[in-house]
Image (cartoon, one colour):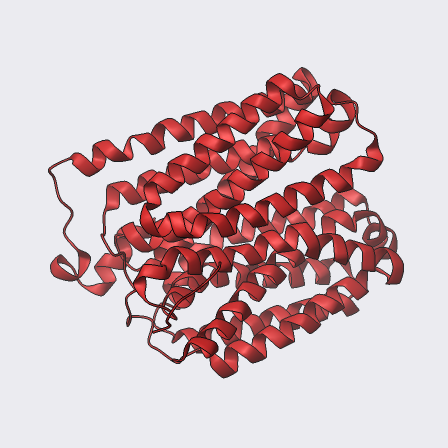
Length: 412
């Protein structure tokens, strides 16, 4: 495949992560107009987000295992087509039950898309560029948080919430066309990104644990950031949007900047991003009463967490003990466990101990993740070696072991 075609496909796949992230988060910002239009409570609309996350968390691994033999172009095209249809249904629903079903269908395609998109994108370019390629893919999700979701909310407030989902479905059609037409038709068991470059089950499960804890730490602090800056930092409510935009821009910069470091030292990059997140949250806990410090540290925490997610994608392709798509699905599920757990813990702490403690809990969880990330060096120096799955096990057995930007240079 030529470099130009590969780059266009990569942009298309990044566009997919942009759209999935936007679609997942839109009900949060359109909570009130959706509730009024559908004659349900805001809490009911909030369940659209909760159930969406639960479907992704539960379905990622089993669905990925189920379709593990489907060629990537066919699978990704089908997923994007399903995304377009389910969001189009959302535009025309009059029943909350049908809307919930449509959201669950979107979440099921989301669960599979995030598992397959990382190895599919990595296959477009030579192995030495994996980190930068994964960074471009993940950048789509962060651009969605910085620009896509605010734009969708702006459109929904002016043209009705259905217009936002219509726009998402329309853009999804464009991404579907690019992927269906240009992504190479390869078998999912072929190519350098099919399995981990250096398979290691212990390091993989360490990665999964770090993913849960670091994500929970980030979300415990971020979920109530609006309350933090208005109550603890004494900033006006009108400034929240600008602060979140600053965090979003910092996130995009972080995820793009980390690409080269991931290629050169993925575990070092992971440890550095978790350390930076811990430092930012500790600083926010100590200095958050100072408005300027609060804004800067919130942006720094966003940069660190976004870069951390890119490191996860790169490390999956390194240490996956079986198929990389199953490993990516496992890590995706772990991140969603962290999101759910972090929001839950923050919600428990907030009423009784105040918003300052939610940031402190986030910092503590991040520091535990940092300690675990540092133990990777001990595992690496352990003389016990892992047997590559293709040497000691069949494909099914290897899969079962896991179940329970940017100058891209010369393309392949």
